[in-house]
Length: 176
Image (cartoon, rainbow, N blue to C red; front, side):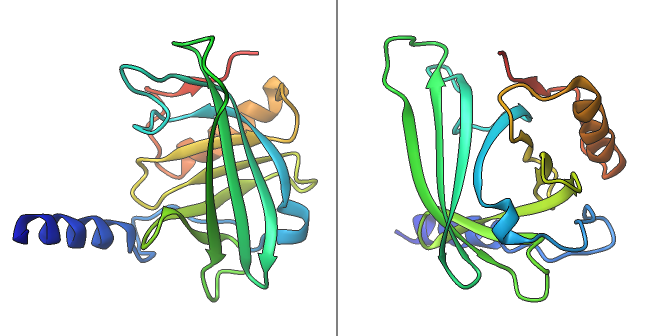
């Protein structure tokens, strides 16, 4: 029991990262009303909940809908490339805006009371694509409003991730 409590506290502490001199920079402001809607994953760093011995997420989408002031409903879904007959996988969660971040930093939970960081570190002025990561740099997603992101936009997004210190050697690109 003590070990489980310690592991829970360590997991919670890992989610509570504060910005510091070595963390990625976020964009100055995110207009949440413009950010809401459907995004398609163009690329990501491997994540255990998307990549495992039995799961390889493809055709991944994230849908954001308002829940109230500063709160967002999150619906992530994907197909499993390792099991083409399996139904679409769906995960529901919610997020809230970190105070003082102007919408650029969110905390997301799919399993309360545990929250993870969702930092917008790059954003197209027209909200056509976004670069989202975590301060630990273990999580990174390149999102696009369209199913196929233009290669020049992807290059720009990847340059932002590189500039902010993300290691892209294990990057998984979405397949059309």
